[in-house]
Image (cartoon, rainbow, N blue to C red):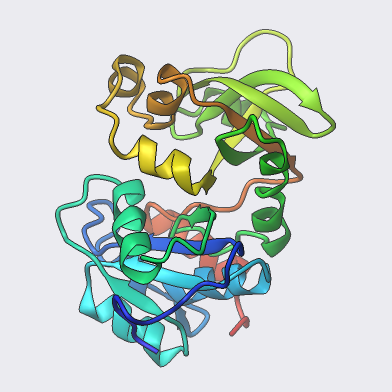
Length: 255
């Protein structure tokens, strides 16, 4: 069902999964609709999010074509403005449209270019929010090879261990990971307390955010706490034609 402001109503106190998707990719034009094993990539991501079984799943998009693909697959979409500069801004607009009653207290932002994300990993992002001191939760996987350590396209997160398989984030960077490990590959999936998302989108870009081109720094520099759940592996993020071919091979035969 294609839905707008009066469409999907999340259950009270149940997390809401929002998937931002836009057509304006420069390295891989139209990538949300790229075919992978007979389905658009955005549908694969939606199916993974639905399989997490944590709450309603809605795609937030500025494209009628994306919304139509989601609807055809039996999913739910909400139209948003085309001038958002980040996925966080897009999901906040969608949240206001579909949940004006403020029923959802936790919002999970699943990037629309992660067709191999594990449903269990989406669920894992909720665990740090059991601690009331945590504002935002995210994911990371231990870096196992030297190529990832030196790859500027791999965002690395460093932090203080606070529990088994959990860190309190201290920094994010694209720079080479150096020194003693373990080092961690950050996965761009976020679980926000609703109040944290509302605060985050009002903050101006921070100095380290501008330097690193990583908006996580905006939250850290504003004193917000981000904790990281450690999962077994990082999903494939599709940004280039080469990534798309890898995704097709990984998901061959899957509908």
